[in-house]
Each structure stands twice: as structure tokens, then as C-alpha cells.
Image 1 (tube, helix red, strand yellow):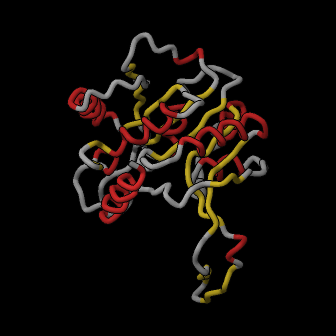
Image 2: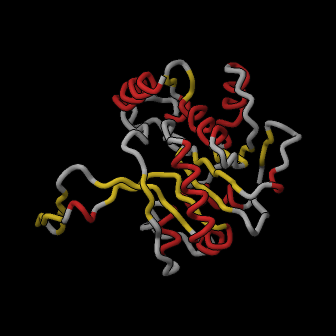
Length: 238
């Protein structure tokens, strides 16, 4: 499996914390031919904000970006154009998110590691959430950030809708963080269509998933209007 290192002095195997940033999304729902992780947010690609969040955290994990092979050179050119020097490794993406995460995991050989898996298109993740996730997962095995639903929730099944208890509903975000042995064991399972995120893969082992507090500003760039919202939130942070 191909892997490119932005900095040859960057020793990936000597750290305890790792971040696998999965950047396999397309631009279909953004009505853009360019994958959304490369779209400009206040003049800078979305993915760069995401990487910076982990780099600025106290945890300072080793960073692995999982990216479709055809976009590796494009990303390296963007890094040059924006003078982006944060050390990271590039790994080829897979046909599914499941396979992409497996490709990232293959680069980590530290059995005592704590690994965060994160969406490339969540550029506004707070560093406190990153640090809290690493700390909690190191102590308790896993941690996923999530927020309570602000809206009433209904489930539609077989044409019949039913109200759910809002206080029991959480909207799951990333990072989703796990002890290395647990995550590796989970990803040895065969792929299933109901594996929607890393928590669902680990949960399939019979493991209880721990929820920690996320943020409503931890926006996932999915639709065109999300760029404008993210730019406004960034302006408010300055």
C-alpha cells in the first residue's frame, strides 16, 4: 500500500496518539466536481483546517490522511501553494469508508496507541474535544463525540411514524477515538452495510460505546450552504 510522507523526519511509530483523517468524499451533494475536502473555506482548503485542529491540540497526534490515490498529487500541490507544512502521511483510500480506515490502520504498528478517526470535512472541531476524546479513550477504551438533538425526532418505518424521546437521541460526530487493539480487532470483521461509522464497527464486537460531549459548531461540510455557515463560524472565532 502506497504511503507518502510530507516530512521524512516524521517518525510515525514513536507516538502514542494517532489521527486517521478520512478524506474519501466526493462533491456530489455540494454540486461540485471537486471533492468537498478541497473546497476553499476563507481561501484555504477545508482539509487544511481539519489537519490544523489536530496539530494544535495538546495531544499532537501523528496524522494520517486517507485520500483517493488520484488526488494525492493534487493535495501535495495544494500544500505547496498554501505553504502548508504540518507533517502527515498520505495513504490510499479504499472503495468504502471501512476499507479506507483499514488502510490507515495498516500504517500504525504501536500496540499501545490511541487512535482517533475523523471526517476530513469537519474543519471546525474544537481542540478541547480532540484532547478529551484521546484522554477518555485511553482510560475507558473508546470515546465518540456527540450532541443531543435540538429537534423533536420521529422514526418512519413501514409507512408509520413514531415519536422518539428527544433526550435519548444523540447526533454522532467525529472524532471517534479507540484504543488500538480494540479498533484493530473490530476492523478484522468482514464489511457490513450497517457499518455507518467506526463506532458501529466496534459495537458489533459487543463493546459499549462511550459518548462524550461534542459541539454544535462541529459542522460537517455536506451541502453548499455549509461553506457559508462555516465561514461565519470561523469569523466569530477570530
